[in-house]
Length: 386
Image (cartoon, rainbow, N blue to C red; front, side, top):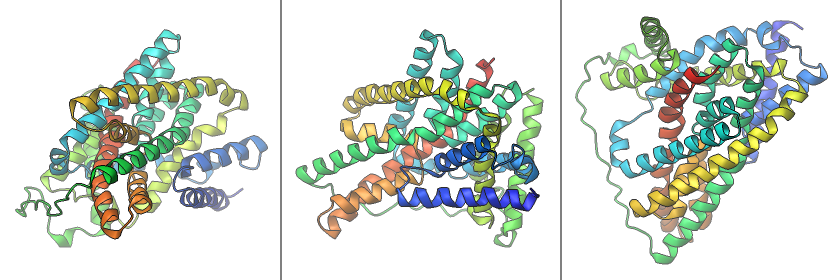
């Protein structure tokens, strides 16, 4: 099969996965669909084992991961995080609580590595998976690689239904007690020029990609200087935040490259390369650890949310919903907020108030867990793999 046929086969699977995600409102996400299709393709022989290599996705996809992690740093709005400080604390603490409980239970069961791999992914999904898979490949830990992908693809099935139920419960409470008055006036940030900001003419799609490449290359150089003590991809994310604050990188810069869709496709698909060498037996082996990880992580979020809801005077359902955002992140955080507001609000005014109440909180919680927390967790966890 030539490279173009291999690439087209993968594109078809990805497009079908996106269609399923839209039809199911992201309950069945793109990664789950294409993972199942890829496994069936490899096991049946329809897809060759070297499909990612021949199509060129394997090599280029792994190179582009650094640029994507750098761009994620430009989505961190420090001013908004300050305004939603309670939400940030709840989201971070729930993710930490779930991760610690997963690791503790795994150690007690004599499966430490499963806990070390599962905890960061449960606490943040894609970003953590990208960091961990890079290390797992180097260590040739195929079963743990399969387990990592399983946690990533199945955590939605627990996180989304629980968050949906919690948000509905919170909406009912608000409607019964009286909706809060919302201040729609937002703070305007100072418009002063940042120290490394370039002129608007320098923000073409190619220049944006070049700037991402420069920062990713600097991150790679720093990782060599520290002898890999801090993972290269973690440094990419940190410098993405730094250079965004300095003005060298624009906010959400990936959307300005005119290639964000292609890059997202490459980075999403490249993590499936490990499935080519996965056997049905390995999938069965990770099923029990997978179920334990998801259940224990969920219990950890509930316990942590119960404690924090009292401390911050937040309802338990709202605290649980914020904690569960680590299992799905954006855009599901936005979709759930909008759908709950639309379905629960009885008038246009109620729908607007509910959406204004849920959306900033859910977006902030999902952002802080899926990016900041998960990347640092994964970078820390790598040191303890063997």
